[in-house]
Image (cartoon, rainbow, N blue to C red; front, side, top):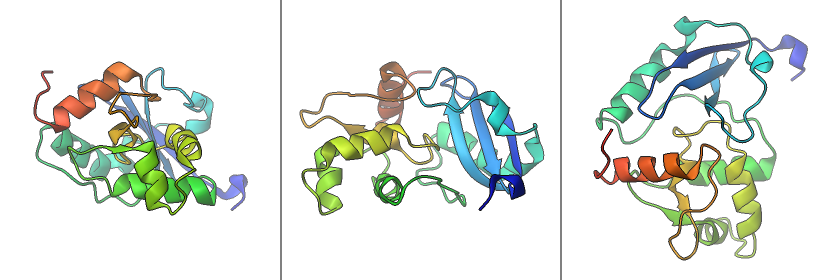
Length: 166
């Protein structure tokens, strides 16, 4: 699809983890970015503000942060390489409150030696929280890389485990 035919819009919503920028591509959610997030595209690429497009996403995020929603059902447009999209689909299969290691994801993809590539794809996830890249940890159970920062990753994991305080 050529970029000239795309209609990008965005809005910013509050969350317990700071402002979240939601981006839609032709009306379909294509980005969720935290403030100071690594690999966050330039604001100029988000298109003009249009909060009306994001009603369903805002409702589901509010329910998630209230502890009432465990799995998002939004239509997503995940732009990336075929490998990245495969990794992001695996992320969506990690149940709420659980974690997987990069190696476990590589195994699930049928390529046990791809844990570094999985980590790189995980870091480029354009729709954080909804595509739960925060649920991926190191082989030893340690927190490793998170585009939104390790503090946010820990807070999201604690929240899903029921031990977070906002």
